[in-house]
Length: 306
Image (tube, rainbow, N blue to C red; front, side):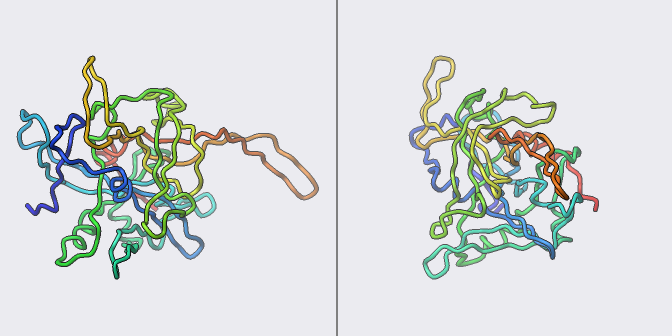
């Protein structure tokens, strides 16, 4: 198996000899702006990469091991992949994500554009259409480019199940600090192609289904274009478990979920001559669908039926 199809997964309890990727590189190589376009409109959003890993070759062995990458998925929101025209979800004419490439010693975005038919063959959605998460299979599209001789593409980084809260010794509860990484309103560092990193806190009971749906709330000021952003715990390099202190050479985080926008309630209706205004009440909180939904969609996801 080609080494480009392998990933060395590090547990939080790493030794001092282990070299981990720093957060500047992690957040940069993990995320990508995306765009869905049709004749009527173009919608912008954020996505990130997710690896489905094979089991360890030796499950009894402790410490880092090489793991085969079974597949790579682009994770974003359902409403980003299937923007609405009126009240109807519509598959876009094209859907694009991006890789970073060095051209004349400068970083540039290299778009990978999927026409509608290819997007629908690759995309998977939750069996409950109200779950605002979608996956697009992209491993072959990426490796075909990166594996070429003299490739100037930057490598990408992906989270996996091993990054789920509790899987890597990082636990989460209400009021804990969180970080959201994305491209609000398509804004980012255009020279370094670096996303915007925003902070907030867990604003509802962690692990509970808010209002009966598999999401939690965060208190963070975000904007359109942040849809599909990865939400992680505030990175740390020290954790205490069972009275014992563990240290990592680089800060680690838990993958908590996928941001999909702000909840609103209908307020009062104001009527004037030939005009009706419906008030929307916001709460400066955001919806984050739990990370484990990614594995659920990989296992039991469905295609979009126009």
